[in-house]
Amino acid sequence: MIRKKKVNRFYEKDGPSIAEIHYKNIELLSRFVTEQGKIIPRRTSGNDAKCQRLVKRAIKQARHLALMPYVTESTK
Amino acid sequence: MQKYETTIVVDSLVKAEDLQATVTKVETFITNNGGSISSIEEWGKKRLAYEINRKQYGSYYHIQFEGPGSLPQLLEREYRLEESVLRYLTVKTPSHILRAQAKKAASESASAAVAEPVVEEAAADATEVVAGEPVAAATEETSAVTAEPDDAAVEEETTASVDEGEPTLPEDSKTAE
Image (cartoon, rainbow over all chains, first blue to last red):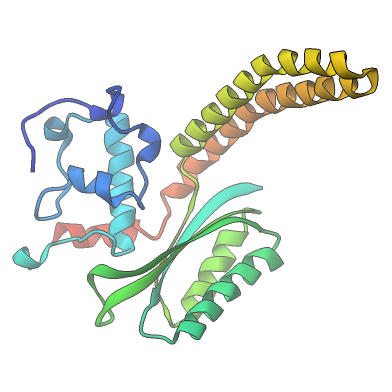
């Protein structure tokens, strides 16, 4: 998991667009969780408030549908 | 009319025809209650991120539809009665996605409007009778462009309040464990 890098990729030209933030886009959302499945905080992910809010909601929705884990096997 | 999307996770152990029956049941339920389906995606059988009722796999279906504000409530009651539905999630199509779609549609019709005069000239060259048509098409397109931002704005306002009450939130407590 890449950490420390503090850029909001949603505003970069070749980055993902905000419209891609959706609970079905697991590939994108999994970049914003740790290996344990925890949501990466804003101070680390570099997201601004808006993006983080959208990502947070999408991850929680994905978790509800069992598309993403609440906790991973190793930590159970 | 409001745009919604709903995802259901159906027990993959049920027979294929029962699976299909469940989905068609949902479809007819939506259309019978004043809704119209715009797309159905079948994501297929996926491994669940965690066990639900001792099940490891589920079949995912994603339906986008439009309907009156009373429909999602009725639909979710229907899901609860259906035992093979492991999980469901119905949300208003997120406003940031709607906005992006509206923007895209607007820019597309704008570029179409730019291309329009060329078509008009060509038609005028051909016959006088045909020349009337492109003009009508052009006015239609401009009215579509003006209408779209309004729709998006209204949907935006309403989305924020209802999203809070989604079935996802009660699950949040699990995250803390």
